[in-house]
Image 1 (cartoon, rainbow, N blue to C red):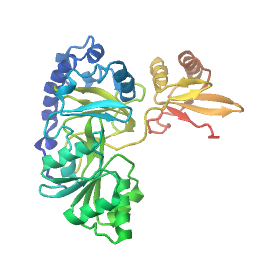
Image 2: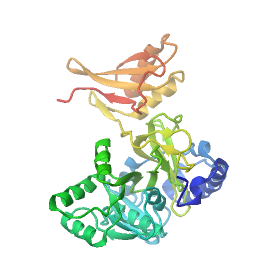
Image 3: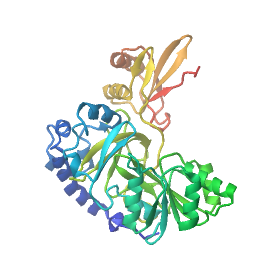
Image 4: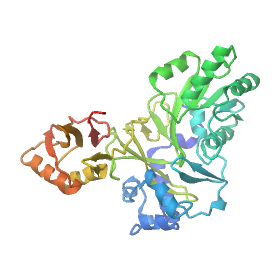
Length: 409
């Protein structure tokens, strides 16, 4: 399992650190030419931003905030210095969020992910991601062509025509959602059509539960998962080692405590924050709203970059209590006021006919801490609740800081 598409995938720690030390200052200096980025970077010297620890000084930009920012300052919210005409393609993704595609051979850095999934030059690939308005289809198309594959730009739907294409061109690989792969395979089986040429797949855009993985595998298809977004392209991808998702060489992934920009220890679940230090279109600490965790160590496949555990849920846990919103950022503020605590979790329940809040906090010394936490909770949220001290390490490592346990209807 030592074969890689890009030699950088096997870089040493020193080589990777040298790349960061060069790429980060250049990208941050370029980003400062955009007005909204310049405001984020006020007081930051790009020359000092040479590693992950200094990168963490930049405030996170939440993907959920982009639609409002872009509406106020169209088209890119002041976060992109380049003019729309400098891009190869312009998109409107769900949100709505406006995005541009760089003029490059593989602008969404997808080729390595396809190679890891077994795709090879000279093969035919069926691409069922959409090409209309959103970048998904183009992302995959670029990566497959950079790898040397011929692409069938099928897009989603129109199952009968897709089966015609499969029987005519005999694609070896499929890319699209796992759900649509099942739809195609079921339709082929029901109609007596031959889809047996497909022996590999790279899937994304929807959950791929173990039951569906087993079904696809039983049908002779080796399927791999890719985690990416319409803003960034490939963030991380699965390899033959099946030991987590390896982060793409072009991006930097941090896992931070939800509601903050503070990195968490390896293995702890938190929010995914991504930086792309590309000076032509730098993306700095974009918080995606997804939960994951860093997998310690190096993959058995020989790729040396950071690995993440895959999708573990959503980080946006904002909930309404007694008619007021309580946000993860507020629980993070309570934690800052009590630095001796470990994980905190606000549990929202019903007490009689009223909402009730209990803040559970990990701590070794409970002397007076519960009352102090309850007071801080009230000061920060303007809502009254109780606090409960629990043993260190006893709260689940699932990234949740707010758990809404009220009964549904």
